[in-house]
Length: 209
Image: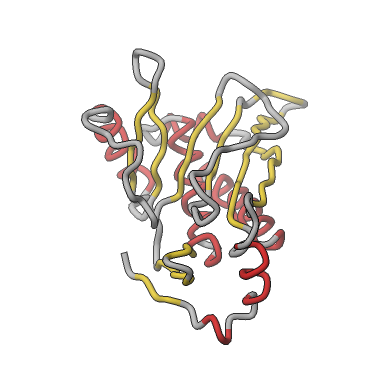
């Protein structure tokens, strides 16, 4: 992946970065209910699943916000040109493994590639592998939750974490909780808002596919 380091001397959020980087838990998170009406049918029509359609939409949305492509590396801020996803895949024994995806391909091609990769998931996966440039994506499809607390290995960990909850039918719409957790040294509320707005736009694109 292409990457450039930001000029911290001229970085407009330099003071914010320094302030939040000194915190034991420097993260900001938000859960919002999203309108995903028609997404399940659109995904099935394109040869995919509801979860993979959500993953695709989230990847497009997150990559559309530059601050979510930033990572802290040795005290500096690196910005990647593009970030892949690493999502959890449930295994038969109730544990999980990770599956990495590049979401830049067309939706139908993405569904085919994702299905093949998920079929081979769980073979020698290192849960502590260095995956600096990735978005971490997971799903809790059993619960329609309103908040979520997630673990991080250290205050310098800066991979955004995206989680989907259980979708429900309500007043003629399909509603799903969506959570984004990000390092506050890099991301503010305005950037969270941009992500959720872009996710909704991506869902509309898929349902119109």
